[in-house]
View 1 (cartoon, one colour):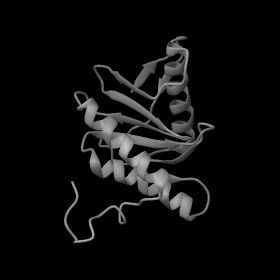
View 2 (cartoon, helix red, strand yellow; view 1 turned 135 degrees about the vertical axis):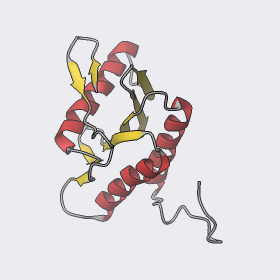
View 3 (cartoon, one colour; view 1 turned 45 degrees about the vertical axis):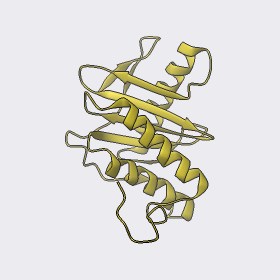
View 4 (spheres, one colour; view 1 turned 180 degrees about the vertical axis):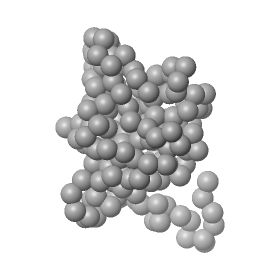
Amino acid sequence: MVIQEAGGTPICLPSGADGAEPLSSVGESSPAQAAADAAVARLREMSVDLRGCALLDRDDSALAATGQLERWSQAGAGFLAAADAAADREADHVHVATEEGEVFAVRHGDLAMVAVAERFTLASLMILDMRAVLRDLVVGKTANSAEPADGGGGR
């Protein structure tokens, strides 16, 4: 999917045809890295329409992604920069829809998540899911610790 930035520079957000790309991560496995990988995997599980996503830090470096980290870092940073420039401030969340698909970005604290989804994805639900994943990551919840104590199912 190609998105035209305000300055005319195309931003290509990577995604596989079936959205089944392996998770990529930076550095050695550590609790922080494991949590970043788990956040990306969790959003993937929550959204059947998701083509791909990445978790970015304050410096726009991808901490975890469904594809190549460097490509997601560049594309995510460009997407967020275009949104910030259009609003003359840091955007809290962004949603862009094209005929080819939809792109979302949500910021929470020093983290941001960028996601590409199929066309006609329910935007409010995607943004809600992304916020939930980021919020849980910030407070230290993982997919396993978020399950009810009685063993009941999640969503």
